Length: 233
Length: 233
DNA sequence: AAATGCAAATTTGCATGCAATATAGCTCCT
DNA sequence: AGGAGCTATATTGCATGCAAATTTGCATTT
Image (cartoon, rainbow over all chains, first blue to last red):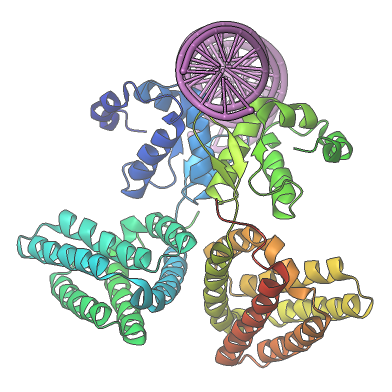
């Protein structure tokens, strides 16, 4: 693992509160994996991380187990943890699940979303459009992801939110590539306007179909952009 | 926790292999929680379990973290783990997800299932029918669960199988109650025949609708049978 | 030079100990 | 009697130590 990358981050960890250390480490590591700072297939060494993070191996290993459960790490007994390497098929599989979950979410969201929640999503949509116009890809992507999560959350199904969030994180890096193409990016923004509109008008089936098409289009581009970037082991 | 129940089980644990202890403990605990041997809302004491299982706290605590991730345990920092208490709404939410996941699975299963897999499911179906005729409720239930999992597995989407299995386990106890009513039980067996038939004929949309109706009917009975057995906290 | 075998060094799995926190039990007060 | 406050006990969070397993490095052989 490239040790240089960690220098800046290690400071934040000082004095994490007792009882939350393993959870914080989990979130911290999840972020690193999800954005690709720790690349797929890389072995994650316990000692290196404990030194960087200033914690002992116990909470770190607890974090490993959690991330294994989330499908982000693979732990071979006696031989350490490695970041899971996803094939394009894996990503497609996860996307299929996400689309299915959004279908469920869409139908419930139009029933249960409060006007306040819809307005919050509308605000996010406006900020996302801003980011698009300023060509701030990262910020755009972040808000984009949050909008989708918020629509799911609006369904007020806790388990749904949990599963969606987890599966979404697993393939986050790949979805990012879905907005590299500028023409696609512009169309995605337009699609989001339609999505928001369908939510406002509480048209469940329409919302569902819009989301489905939105994801499929995004992945189609992402796939091209990535061009099978990682071989299966 | 009723300590008597554990006596018989503690022996099995002797000599669990190094490198698998926390995983075995996880599976072991999951079973106990999933079938209700450790009742919902009950605090799980680390010391008691380590003594019963003959292991140290480290692998046990790793198991706790995994089960928390699966939504089976709730860990409050400094205040221990308790078995999650599900409200009827929680169960309904999970069921909604399961139905959605089976919809995805159904469409893929009819595309990807090999004849061998279908025949395995057919065999399970036959054995399930046998269990029904012998009034062996537990065995029936077990095979029933396995059939649904196998249909999902036939879709050959690893993440789907993983998520389905996890969500299914979370509400297993409640689904069991769905077969208490004998008239319902008989109809469920008939529905399974239709489900198998649709799979054999590879009629995706039909399979999807049959599964959906099957679950809804089962839950309707289960709900009546349970009559809101657990209050939300 | 590549492959094989072996020993040293690293790394993991797990048990244990200590400090921090929560819980239970007690006393005292109203 | 019931509750507030305090003390003792139990329990959790985390660091650390040791043994087992794996990986690494090197010498030897083919």
